Amino acid sequence: MLVIYGAYVPHKQAEIQRVVCIKFKPGTSAEMIEKHLRDFASMKNNVKELVAYSAGHVQKTEGTADQFDVVHYLTFRTNESAQQYALNADREEFVKNNEAKWANVLEMNSHIEK
Image (cartoon, rainbow, N blue to C red; front, side, top):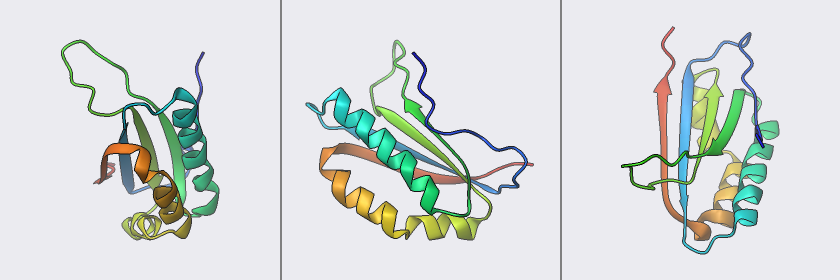
């Protein structure tokens, strides 16, 4: 089964891609991880400069460490939009409500090459 949490909208201009990788603590149930994905995806409705959002489970491959469990991809119109997202009240509440379940988090922005 394929579950898509977001979709790309190519007709909207974008400058910044943000990647959020999360490793859950041992014992976090599959149901809690799915709830995390749904809740994170629902934040896209409250960030007007978000052009696109998608997420999924990290594919396990032989010879690689299991550093992260899920990856979120957020695309913003401008660098300022990405900075505003980082300060967004819904995002801050999401982090507060979920960070106890996280063993590791990696967040980074990159410019979209045109």
